[in-house]
Length: 333
Length: 272
Image (cartoon, rainbow over all chains, first blue to last red; front, side, top):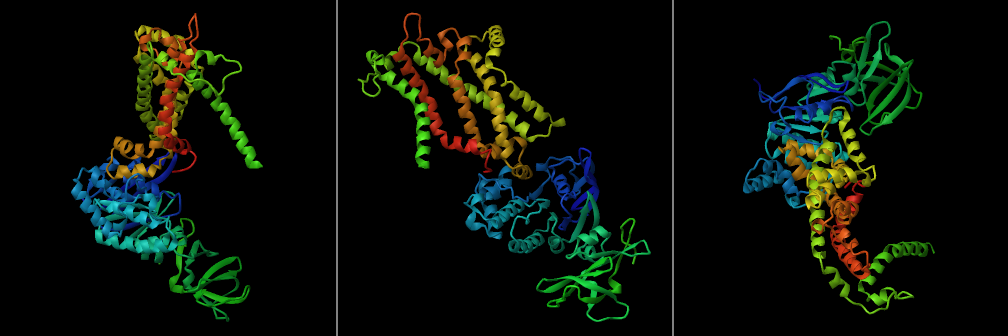
């Protein structure tokens, strides 16, 4: 018996294709879990399986200690926020938010009270009489959230809920979402391909690829101790440099911020030529060519290098990640 | 110049469409002597309502009521059966893509000329003692309209984003509840358009009604009007008056449903 959400070897096939392969995850009550991965990695399918919109071919799903694997979606006590928000176009905002309670046959006065309460919390009070199509994207997003939280479900599922918002609103909503989840303390599974969302929101991140979980750990550990070369390359922007060490069976990984640069020769450093310099404002990315090797380094703001200028670099020795080339798994430090 | 051409073309089309209707209406209002005047009395004649009272003599009212019952009954029946069928075909997972096959078969029943089914239908209805009955004709018309309902409604259901239905399921709604409270309100324009088409088809149908009804008890308007052509005379005035009256319900219904019709027909093209 455990609180929270537990997935035990979930497998989902579409025809012969395995979209989710033996995924096991456990999330404690109140925990914020982010499923992170490229499109087609099975993260959305996994979420839909938990929601009850797809039936798993194998495995068990437990929520708050009860096996819900074969329950109908409506009996799972799970709320979901969709990428498209999926508001009911023919209902007012108040009706949209109150719908989960109406379906549960709660009394009109209670529904009205709860709707008002949730709407006030999400700043929707003035919009309650409108229809969804009269709202902006950010407002619709809030309505979708309000509809999800009004009945205090046992779990929240969110399928790329911020990806239809513009960049600024996305960062704003991200913070709000995090605070809201903290207040509600309801276990949340959040699907995204945006690593910034994953890093900022999650208590733990499950990095997925090809239907399998590559690493399930805290954002800090996913970043600082990636379990394999895929996680190393996927998390972090710009990506970690992955360099095949000639003469051994090891792939070396080094984050751009851990590459030291010098305009003058230093003993023991490697010489390279500047391929391109990218000014980002708060920092500068310098892409180097050293023989067949290409390395991205992160330099301070305003450091400008000419094309083809000679530079010297080295990897901070205590920051080098080592991976087995065959299995691509992280080697013990 | 271009605009003038456009209006000229539209005007010609309108003229071609309106001319028979105009002729029908004027004939129904002309005295018999004016009906056959040569050159025709296009615009100027002495109007009379005698043909209307003539038309309503006899069983005309009964025919009218028969038509109303039959058109509404068969439309409602076709929608009641066809709408859930269309929803099932549009939304549920069928093994081996059978929803496509079933939909194809349903459509294929409309690919043969209706007349080829008349003999078997006649025999079946005779055995069931449903010849000369409104129930029998209602069944036939329902069967006739069903493929149309299934195909049109399936298209409208396909337009409803799945995520809206999934959201409703997670909110606690049953499959039937999703259909009744979420999907149907969203496809209302499509539903209206489909109903109008069914009504018009049933209202205007002549061939089946002619062959499957031989007594006046179940005769519909089109058959009743045609029966004014007798061995001895053709009552042009009464027939025209009856024709005008027969046109009215469809005209009224279509104009009431017009705003739905336009939205319904364009629903497939533009996402709402």
